[in-house]
Length: 313
Image (cartoon, rainbow, N blue to C red):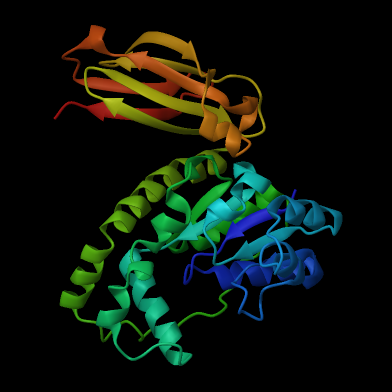
């Protein structure tokens, strides 16, 4: 199964793609950078931008038949996620203000946009780009959503988990002085226009902390997400990648184990992205019997990994 790398602009994607090219060669990489881009490769042009029909499934089969190992591009994950699955999908995010400024300056140097940062970052297609490209899907189920600030650690994790000789590189990096002239007032305004991205990147960072900590400790990492309503319920999902055994999760109330259950409820959106157990990875705890508890926590019983941790304000 090819690895799907969703290349969000100015998040070290050129470096990772260059590493992949060194390993696989360009003939085993398919790129989707839009029909007008010379970088877009032949199978993508034929099946995704064909003049008579678009055949996404045809692209998947053609890519597999051709021995394609890496699919990448500046595209939303929705285009290919259902073809290659969450376990094969990776991406990187970055501080949203720095990312916006970096993309503007890159495009300006290339002569593709006017010299007007203020107009650039207020365009609808430039706001909250990271969330729009990957954050609307169950990104917690992806193989990795890394952060450029921890790029070397993330590449080390990918090298281990994908069993590839990946090495950190620094391709297409902007000059370090590029963002120095942007005022704090403009930075604050860029953040205001990208508040959803800021929340998303913060969530990614918290999740990544646990994933890399488990990797460094040599422990399996349980992938998870949840919804929570105080004194009402916690409804979530949990699974170990590549493992068809239902995860046993425990509800801890004020530090004591109150209940256990198996994460075996059906979650349609997880089946769509080829999660284990055909998406039967869900669980729920009803909290009405613990009204007034000051601390609610959910942990995996196998490794003690914390999936949810809430304290009453």
